[in-house]
Image 1 (spheres, rainbow, N blue to C red):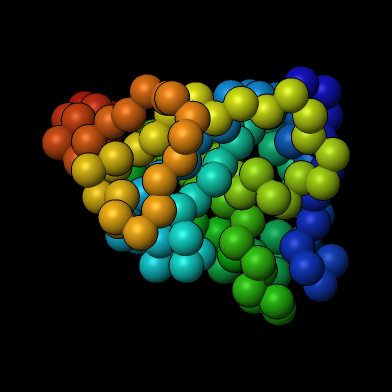
Image 2 (image 1 turned 45 degrees about the vertical axis):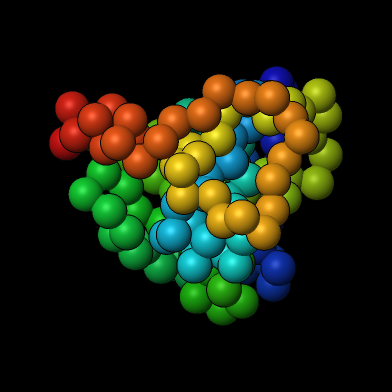
Length: 138
């Protein structure tokens, strides 16, 4: 995909992502659902990300392998950043003009509550599979 721009609700933080993967993921883990009140729909943005207004970004280390960033002014969820690689996953809704998106993976599928489901057929990874995958990168 081409370069995409986004900003938080109040405009204090502006993001430019140069390498967004059109295959987005959905995370059902308790942390993501607590963070946003719903599953986390994320586009993989790699490391070619520029953040203007980073003095308004608060980082929260939410796991052994990643941190979450949000705007200190308006609270907008900005990213989930992997410590080992520096890669960003960002909420798909931050980017107003993305086209050709396709749900490709559901993480922590065994933690998905019974009150919602998706009709999309995707790959799924359970908690045990996720822990084994990320434990190797810590």
